[in-house]
Image (cartoon, rainbow, N blue to C red):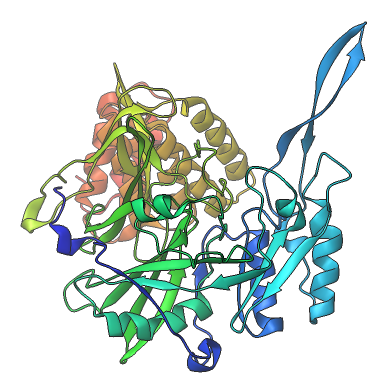
Length: 528
């Protein structure tokens, strides 16, 4: 796959400040069925505040830590056996479900300054422990009070100005994008917004950022800016409108918002986990389903180079098909594996041309990675059961990196479920094992047998065929598939079942079940 020209990307043209009216009043109608991927405790808190305050809501990164993954923090050292030893403590956080939404402003203030503030884990007990709430005509904003204590990055402002900005793109007009913005702000989550008063006018100019009013040190300006793109993901499909919301001015976090024009009205359908906003959007059919996916390619640039390159691919439903189980997220980003993407990342990430199939169709594209960030080795990623998985070469062909043992453990779980006659759960477990170790014929064989036991004979035949493709001499797979063929239409001649039974007897003539298989052959219609 080749990169498309600029008009197929989210190509930044210009930033325009918006003079919006009462935004909530403009975005009427019933709430859209929006899917929120990577939902955090801060997202839930801001959604609650939006309902109670009747305004848009935003927050400083890491203000509400419900749902945050456990972390190690340093404590004052202590003397052990006469020597000073460092002390660390693993801290766990309550789940998002434990965060209850108050129905009043006072209730929200009490929650923020009690349970939510305690999770900030401030090392110095003399530091302010509260969370401050700031309001504008259209926005409400929360930030830990500790951000205002003297430091090189001290916040000195007393008032905040939150102003969304739009970057127009070729496929959508500035006026149309501005008309869609209230709907997005109403239904999509905001990104963390971090005010910065450390940038000089020269720094702002060098980064293409709007200048602050000289002497306005008691007021800070912050706000999400948007880049819009409009396209069709497949012929005759409704127009898709993709927007990237990015934190301004820091630019360390972004979020993709996907919607469609339905019956002449724009509807937000999903928003993504947080991601690196410094990137480009490309559209391409990578999984071979005839519909374009959303490819977000980004990188983090330092003084000398840009590394790593990160690739995230979303399907039309918002599922992150490149999401990795080993999630490597740099400390520069204000998100983690619970509320952020888990990209494929390395020194170079390339989507390889998809293989052509019959009738003009193509199979799933592969992703080649140079110096994968997890282990520094060159890897190829293949789409297996809907997710891109890293593979390595070995004498048997290809197998996932360190997942072989995980696949074996899943297989054991599946066998236990089979003994309990939980065939639906068992087949899902076997399929996961097959995805982790695609070179092992055992797992698709077991998945096919589980489908057979649950009465899904067509799927049983499909998965048993995968086992035979991996290992053409696996006799039991032919026997199991023959049983599935025989179940589909027992009154038919069943030549397929006959062939599989005969193949089993050819491969395992001395098997204990061979006599029973011969009886099955004799019982088939049209038997000699």
